[in-house]
Length: 311
Image (cartoon, rainbow, N blue to C red; front, side, top):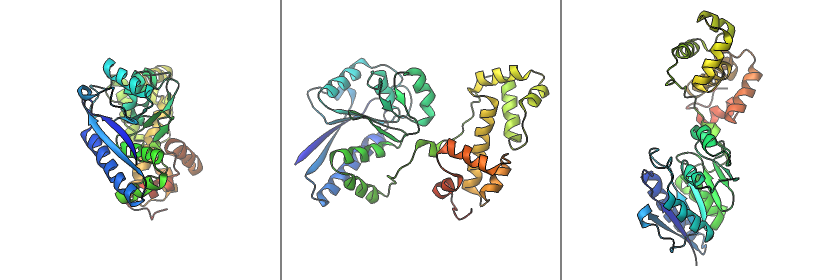
């Protein structure tokens, strides 16, 4: 019988639902392995930083997601030393969500492809330019490093580890048993537009409020600038500084956000929704939507709508 030792690091602020959910899911995986008469079992340990022991070898070391940013934004020398020792002994380092920040801060993601939660993509790139971030990916396997994207992506990490050490058949059987979708998807399927409103620029806030109310109407930076008695160049400069995007980019995300709401919550056709949010060219709307979310509007409706019968 092959035993795969997995060490989950229960660091300060780590999500306890993820920590213990990971362990319990691996216990269920053992049951599936037994049903398939597979000669492999997963032995999962949960340890705080104080309980970590470099003499206790593991095949996989897991950094779960967290509940706030108090820990993963700080450098921890002891943890980095432990992770390095485990990697040198042949362990796979695996992370979910912000666990990638811990790995990157220790230099483990230098020149490596990786992923983390899509909402943290820009801050990750800024902090760790040597890492090759793909924040659309749910899971990235670089051999001795595996990173998973969102807060619940620890489940995807479970399936990846099971597939790696046993077989994809056992991972698929486990996902069916748990009624969890383990099929292909990307983080951008779940992107949400969350406008930045805490920047303190009153002019930009007024423009944002105007766009929120009139996003579907014909648009001109020049006309908006004139209505607030500033030049288009000044308005654009202040807008970019405040919200990290141009006015046109902001408007596009605003239109797409409202399109998603209409797709999910109404029975309106895609063409009608396109016009309702300000796109006169339906084919252009479909292309922009696909580029942003990785799904066509119809595919998005089938995946997320409470009523997917509308076309």
